[in-house]
Image (tube, rainbow, N blue to C red; front, side, top):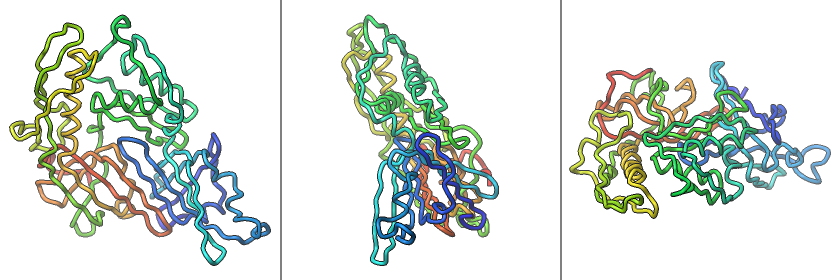
Length: 379
């Protein structure tokens, strides 16, 4: 038992992690886990270390445990009111010992989610006659030992390259290439732990704006309040539209390229995408060998990415009062801050901070404008 209502479970091991011994669980000082919709998520586990026992004069006993060595796999699960949540499935990449003057110390192990293993080897590979979604699925399949379950969303425009004209080439790590392919469509790529320990979802697609919202974040609502603090920003200079001309590599003609809005599912009634006269306008990105379709797709990606973060809310909640775990990369309702900023948001990132008797979560929420699209949110 970590504290009343919250149970912590640690699984650690070289390839197939097993439950950590009770002595290791009891020595946990703090846990911090950050999950984000872009890039790798990370974790930091701190353990109390002392030099008591038979071999104390030689070394800290905890350092002799093979479980905390670099490149071991770590799975962190918290259970709140009998419901388990997998917070992290990652790889230890760093170890730090901080001794004190009373024969005790703090041992901290740091790591990243299992996608770090996709960033270990630079490659020079060609993918002839394969569209981007096929390349993505193929790369993910090579990491099946980490329980990756691919979830690949096809983009609106599907480009199947003609090998005579162009061969997609990868120069870099698998992770770098997956993120580069995602950026072309204003998509994201990440590896999310779960749904059960030992499995992970490898998602390549647009930011998720559908599905059942998570339990509401409540501000200034008496006993229903679960948010400790919140700050909301409306960034009016963020919306960006593309307008100009680009040269089609197939015909050599200069053709118009212009974006007007974003196809993302709206989370606000007064979307910035409806105010094109006040949006920033930029020229299309030119690239050697790009077809007109590819240039249109990349122009739309610029607009989509800019719209995703017009309104940004950052804050902190108490997980016990929230009665659950707020997860990044999903939508959530916010209430109690007024009709301008109430409503649904996309959860861009969450940082979990656990220690004995305390579980807090810091969050970043985003959406494309102000005004709520729903009269109520799920409590």
